Length: 264
Image 1 (tube, one colour):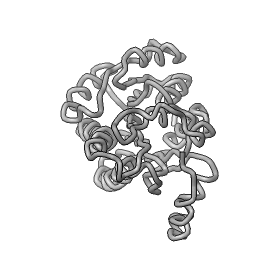
Image 2 (spheres, helix red, strand yellow; image 1 turned 120 degrees about the vertical axis):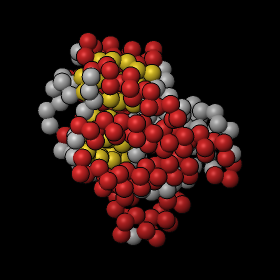
Image 3 (cartoon, helix red, strand yellow; image 1 turned 30 degrees about the horizontal axis):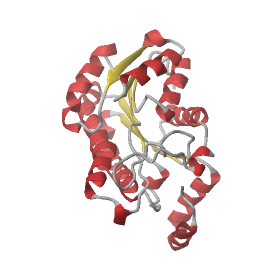
Image 4 (cartoon, helix red, strand yellow; image 1 turned 60 degrees about the horizontal axis):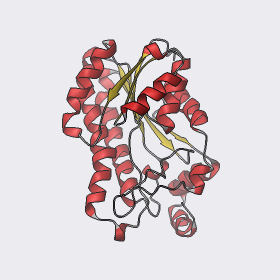
């Protein structure tokens, strides 16, 4: 797929995977809309892009999911069209279920699930009317495998798989593609920003995350999957890919392995 002058909207674009996607897409001469809650950080990412004049910044809070239709209206006016929506925004978790208050579970779902599907639903009429579009969703390997300390995070990512697998069948007649990207460990601040039991940030980098793929390498692999219009791709190390395989064919074995594995 040639991304030259394609309008690509990336949420969670102020750091990590989103930032790497923005910079890599800019080298492919795409037009970009970068969104997150932090406009200052988005401006920093914009300045790093190859053609910053082709990059627009649009503030977005996924937790404010009842008002995202207004944000979509603003986004469409920036370049008069949108070709690809990349749902990358989200928040992780590092706490035991028994210690985590229900308000934290709700917050995780509001951001990861309701925010993502609300934004998707808001743009769907536009894609359906033009009979074309591509929706990309960054889920996680834990959207397929539940691991300790991530119960609600894993649940929110599992929910995304259920929603978007159903949506893929519904929008096929409108030539709308759905791509689910399942990252393994990627060296970003996701673990630092993860919520602990009291709702505050963990503020430390997990060893597994630190040893994960670089965001740039991940972005290159993800963009290749988008170009090929893949339905679902796991991008990570051998351990994460093997876990998905074992989960499918030897689920009891994976259950025993997960109990003994250090997932931090």
